[in-house]
Image 1 (cartoon, protein in one colour):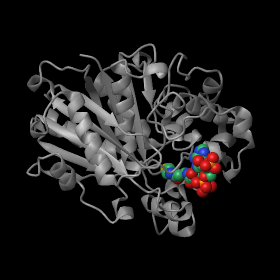
Image 2 (cartoon, rainbow, N blue to C red):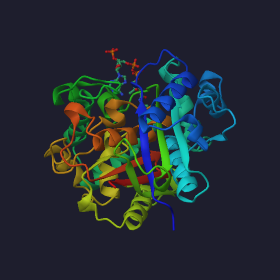
Image 3 (cartoon, rainbow, N blue to C red):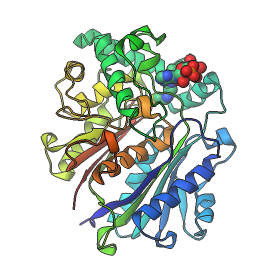
Amino acid sequence: MPRETWVLGAASNRFGKMKETGREAASRVALEAIQTAGIEPKDIGYTFVANAFGLAERQAHVGPLINTALGIPEVPSCTIESACSSSSAALHEAYVHVAGGFHDAALVVGVEKLSHLDTLTATSYFAIGADYPFESHNGATFPGLYATIANAHMRRYGTQTEQLGAVAVKNHANAALNPHAHFQKPITMETYLGSPVIASPLRLYDCCPFSDGAAALVVVAAEKFPNPRTEPLVIRASTRAGSIADMHDRPELTGLPASQRASHLAFQQAKVERSQIDFMEVHDCFTIAELVALEDMGFFPRGEAGTATAEGLTARDGKLPVNPSGGLKAKGHPVSATGASQVVEIFEQFNQLAGKRQVPKTGLALAHNVGATGSSASVHIFGRR
Ligand SMILES: CC(C)(COP(=O)(O)OP(=O)(O)OC[C@H]1O[C@@H](n2cnc3c(N)ncnc32)[C@H](O)[C@@H]1OP(=O)(O)O)[C@@H](O)C(=O)NCCC(=O)NCCS
């Protein structure tokens, strides 16, 4: 039987443009997460780092640098890479180690710094997360690939531009209340509709930005830390799944099989129903991705998440708040920090630290994180003690 495993501490910096280097930001948020957890660096048994684009700073292998800064150079570390789902993959590895009894406490750190690159260079770096010779080399970028998903969804289900816009307006409104967010300004539907087309049908406000950022989590065995000073997140499920990498080889483009499978396994593992989830953070790298995620995980029937969003069901004060942090769309998307930062948001919500974006119910929450166009996906479900 796996041991009961908690997220005991969590921290994030403000996403956007970082002045400090990735390793500095990573070390700082790691220490903050450890302090929040009320433990000492020496309690950490393993450090799992996510940093897909370290080479953009000419710095790979940041685990030992972080551990040295924390005063624990002897602690083992490794870098986990799973494109945009790198730090949820790192969390999964930490969970496996701690729940499996190999270590009593593990550190998860996700970090990315790319803001010194221009958009074209950053786009070409990101594109290596797709199938390079078949997709990227032929000109497919992530905005283009997700535009293909949006076109398929619109054609099959009649999804409307304004429904995509409703995702953007909602997530920008949430991010405006989040001190960690890249964009802290609400937008209107008029602003959305007036923004330039990036890859038809996706406009500027359908896209996540390029963000720098760092986020860290402390994962512990409950039995070893019996008197937590925070409200820990009990990891009720930690699942990952994959699917065919290339979109041109997939039989269907309106959903991501990896999200479907990872969420199916997660609900089985947690032994809870979808109706019990109080709020969630989902992977909205583009607005269409949020709708597809909600449908893939079974929260809405196929083709109905757009209407539900436009009707306000997924707003902060709606029946099922989705992305109260502002999501990748507006909180920002520093690739390898994203999955961990979703859990930082859930931690802050559980600990009543979310200020004006506090959601009403925080009994059970879900985090969903996708790598590339869904060749990898992670789902975590968190509950209370
Ligand atoms: C959408 C995108 C092409 C815009 O890049 P760009 O045209 O070079 O934009 P710039 O960086 O020059 O910024 C221009 C303005 O738009 C804003 N902006 C940039 N991206 C934005 C976004 N995604 N959402 C909202 N505003 C954005 C900037 O803050 C800036 O505002 P300012 O003029 O008030 O300072 C780029 O953000 C992008 O490619 N995003 C997707 C990243 C991606 O693929 N990630 C992986 C997902 S799987």
